[in-house]
Length: 353
Image (cartoon, rainbow, N blue to C red; front, side):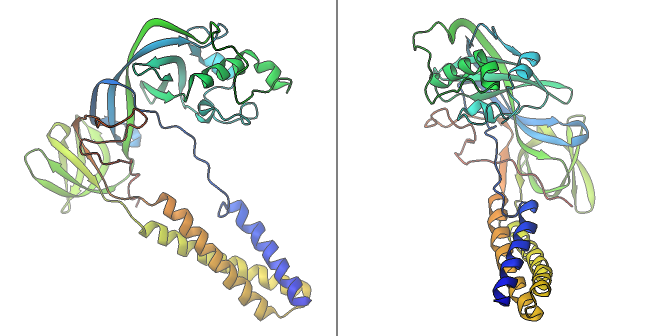
């Protein structure tokens, strides 16, 4: 009975220690990636981020038609209206119960938003936001016209939703032939900027120049006069962006996941040993046996959870070709992560030192 009591106490103590650290907590990612929309032009280049280094970005021209969601908002959603109706602020107590994609989106530096229909007839919203000293635009897709009607209901009944007197259903209560959301003939054209890779600290990479020279080394988060800096062979070189063909960022693969797993395992051993000793002392059981058992158990648990968590964030190597980018012919408009050769790209965060 004493051993059982000590074991239960140790498990309870270790569980309480693990949960606040997020080892067992599921990470929720906002649906912030914009969908691919029909484009007139798409170019990949380098853009300065001031004191935050520089980024590989894609800039493209987008065209669509304005949609007026509801007379309450008019043509666009300004900052005051976004605050009033808790829009573009991510999940909150008012929108959390509803499975609407736009409610996942939180936009830093929000300025305004306009609902629109793309050239392929899909609903979306264009968001204007401030990024440093720049005013930039991004696209967030809306799944269906049904979601548009639900968004109209949300805005027009927001006060009732606040007071829990109105609940949105899975389908809208509005008639499909209702005047709003209203498609207009007003054409909307703008440039969308998307960050593909951010260099915020020294990052191991290789650079292929247009003359065929390949340079190995560390990219430095400094962008000056149209040039990026790279340390190679103990010297710093200035690389004109116009002369760069492509960047190849070296990912950490599974090494980051394994390192995180060992760190989590060590933390589990220490936590388990302390909790086991405390539980044994409180229950009168064998301190040595209980401590070893708890340390082993939670070391294994920590390793497994650390490996699982690290595997989700492990980065592979990625290559980014500068210049015009052509979308694949077989793309259906729901992804904008393809390069000329059809490879999927993800922005690496760099190897921090």
